[in-house]
Image 1: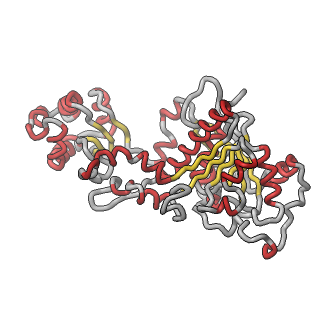
Image 2: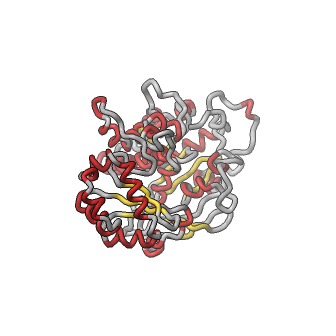
Image 3: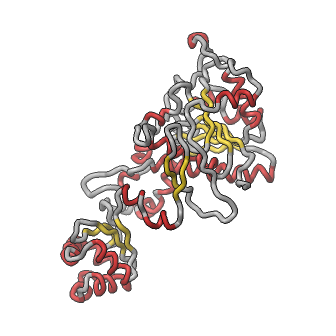
Length: 404
């Protein structure tokens, strides 16, 4: 079976989530991903936790279908290995600390001068220039800087996203920009430099609340899991202890909600609740009235009534509910991938394709492919034997750079 990125080679100096998430999407489409890792410990995300057969939940998520090359970039031969790798590469992805790639001789301008067809994708917190260029950036710091925390949480307390949303945003924009650059190269024969900023990626996703607060207007209020401006739109408790998320988008749905779900004409005809603006203004009293009616229903009964009324709803699932979700099972979204500790279940990437099935390859151990890659490049296998670190050239060590 032919995959869209068959024949494309990506070399990645990656760690944590943003760059690995990007390159895993490329691997899913058939690209060969050579992941350069520290000898011994590897990508530090390998040690985040031990929840998946003793392996990190973060790492197994974003590192399938890759080859691991253990390479100490302060080793005297490392520059030779990298030079050979990049001769054959189509793409270089890196999310090292600000300026680290350039200090290693892997800056975009230098590489494109030697390899004009190469696509170089740099992922950083704030981009390659500007006053914030050299600031360290972690996911939660970018959530803060991008104003995400100002609209997420309760009225009394901001709350971060439960997943690495800034890393994911940057990784996805890196992925789509690389795909666009590959298409552009087909037309022009020239590579390009892609500069991805985590701040800019999450700022794009913050455009609704930014525009809501346009020209000095008050920003959206934090309302927990409820919608900031539409009511009722949020989680509501059922009488059996379950919770159901529901959303009323228009007056037809409001009428159906009152008559079919709440079975209350009194609430429908209450002038305080005519139109979303009125319902939002009186949301505290309306919340109490709704809760009183729903207390008599089980979760299943509430969902059935909402479905009959054609009102959008969802269970407020925990992780066990997602693992066993009947829709994922019915659409056959689960596969199995190998890991150094044995097989684990993994979701297919989003999007059902009629032309191909995505690659679902194994997750590598640290340095698993070092010998085969060195042999492929024509190097003796002892070229990377340990050496005295005090004799390395200054400014060439990946191990001494601070990380994103």
